[in-house]
Each structure stands twice: as C-alpha cells, then as structure tokens.
Length: 143
Image (cartoon, rainbow, N blue to C red):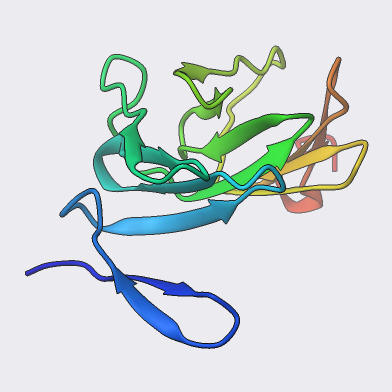
C-alpha cells in the first residue's frame, strides 16, 4: 500500500512522488519555500525550492510519530508526543523544556512572538528564551 502526496499549484492538483512509504501526519510549507513532511517512525523530510527531498530523520534523536510542525523564529518545531523536536533544516535535535513535571507534545502553533505547545493537560508558551507552563485546571493538584 502506498501513500499519496498531492500538490496544489493554485490551479490544479498533481500527484507527487513521496519520499517515503511511511504514513505522513504533518506537512508544513515555510515562507522561505521549504516544505517539510513528517510522520510515523520519526520520519522527517525537507524539500527546498531547488526540488528533491532531503531525509532529516534521525532514529538516535526520535523514532516515534511526529504529529505536528510549526515554524517559529526561523526554526521548525515538531511535536513528537514525548519529545519536542526542532530542526534548522539541516539536522533534527531534541528541544529540552526545562520545566518540572510530566510533559507531552501533541500540537503546535505560533504567533510572531510566541510558540504554543499543547499536550496532555498542559499548554506551554515559549518566547524564544524562556518557557511557561499553563496547567489544565482539572489537573492542578492545588484545586
């Protein structure tokens, strides 16, 4: 069974050759023209404006599913459920979130000044320098 990758050029759809047979869960087009694909088994691919896919996957860093991606401050952040990952377009690394307590990373979004990361019972805010945790009231032991 193959997975399909489609491209919309503004007028019509075209079937593209996928760089993997692994299931893909996330696609991200950046303002610079790069396109990222991520999914099962920690797969991560980048295609730049010159074409061709570059495999940025690194099983030493992450080998579980990558669910979502978002660009923030020139880097692409990736939600890997139990790890928050980041790439500069050349290599994949883990982004350590220096906050105590359990953490999970399932969804991402960003404004110009903030990266927002949601997981099981937590929301994290990152301003490029420091992290803040917002605990779901149902999970707050002080309530």
